[in-house]
Image 1 (cartoon, one colour):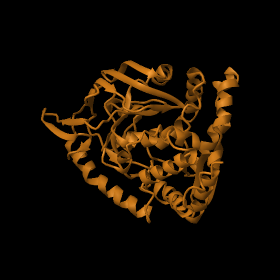
Image 2: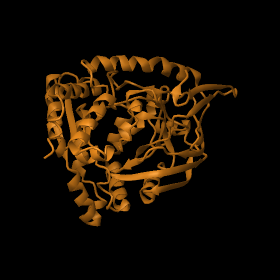
Image 3: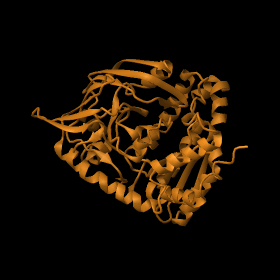
Image 4: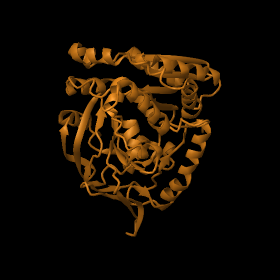
Length: 417
């Protein structure tokens, strides 16, 4: 029998990981409501977070349980009108939590292929239904009006997918080690390590923001040749961000990216994905995207073509980009040289784009701009944002200024600035 995943790792280190999510991830304030989204299989870790949140001064910690197996049964057997319906009471919960100033912690544990037998069309319809009902909530998260954080724990299915040559117990142990290493949560003082990590972002962001490159040009030997036009007065974000009250937090643990939003209509060329994309439990692999004037005009996936199509056709903005991210291959995650089959981890090993919605925070003075002004500035809007990795060891990135001069930003996958 395989020992439970929480018996395989030092309990004190897991408590530090939970505390990192609370005190650094969402930076819980005294008397703040905390919502933990977790699958029932991750109950042990969710409760460690709950304890850490109360220790940090939370007024109430609500665990919002989910169950992927039940979700699979829903997609397989629910009536059509249920697939197209997201209950008002579900949306009302988020509205009340948002108005109460809640912080959200999402515990994820990837199960590749769990929805492989599900109709992509049914999944797409339900996702459209719930994202439409929760549009206001997602707008608050994208603009960092509310604080939130994603972090991961392993499971047997995920671990054996990542390490197929190991026994189940050895695979679990190995994935635990990589998750904590990549999350910079394996040291004696993870919170202090994250303070140092954040300071390293600042000088690079300043160079990029001061330069205001008109276009970024990405090339590699796999066939990526992509010109990404940038809006005027764009901002690069990386490391900690701040909510509307100026409280810093980290939406992703781990995070290695510095990102901004492209101009919706100024992306041209070809992007060849370098890692599988896990979208709603399905795998999209060996694929490319062709862009013209910002729009995805052609695409192909050897695996998951229908899923990729449903993603791109979700709404009017899901065939445009909302994010471009620069990620060095010189980080704990990149050095692991592992395919995680999980977007949160894989996207932080290499450069990636985000299909869909752009964050208003990637424009200067965005809080003073209306939705129409954000649109005129070139920011895309969509119900979704899905990241696709395309960086490689020979990735080259050149920043092109308004006057045509060029600056080498990345070479061989690492920053040069």
